[in-house]
Image (tube, rainbow, N blue to C red; front, side, top):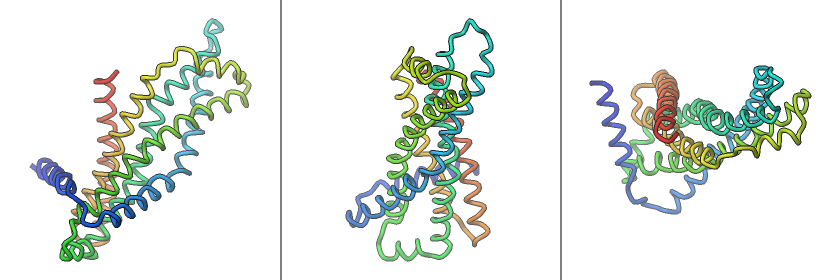
Length: 245
């Protein structure tokens, strides 16, 4: 019954934020602020993870392909498809669930505990629309862009590691990148990115918005939001793969 209570309240929260903004200029300013916080603020960690993710994929793939009958271009194909299909959207979004999700949950939780949300509601402001909608909209816009960046940097990191370790030349790697490339893989990865972006932003927003208690409960709700977001990302990953592949 506890699950259905949370799920019903979550749906009501999503429904409640779908209303006309009272002040469009104010909402736009909050939206741009969230875009900066979510997108620009996560550039560093996404870039580092992506480069090393691609580099490790190249080295480990070369270690496993020991047969001389397999061409070296196969390494680039495997790295490309692995980065695009799984590593860039799923691994990056799980990291963002911890970075972005915990920030959203703790920010809203602090506003709830300090009664700032109650003050906004007394002023006649729809707090669900003003506080939650810009965060979800910014995440849906910025996280797919971060995933695209992760794809590019992941493949580049694999190319760099392959050349530095003497596994294969840049020309061989580039030839492997072009062989049997399917544009649908990029579309599938972006579908996952949009789905994960909604999960990363909406679930922590729910836990932060409805937190009760003090600073201890804020920490607990932030942790719970990250755990639930990661589980839902993995579940959605499986469902999307089963439906679209």
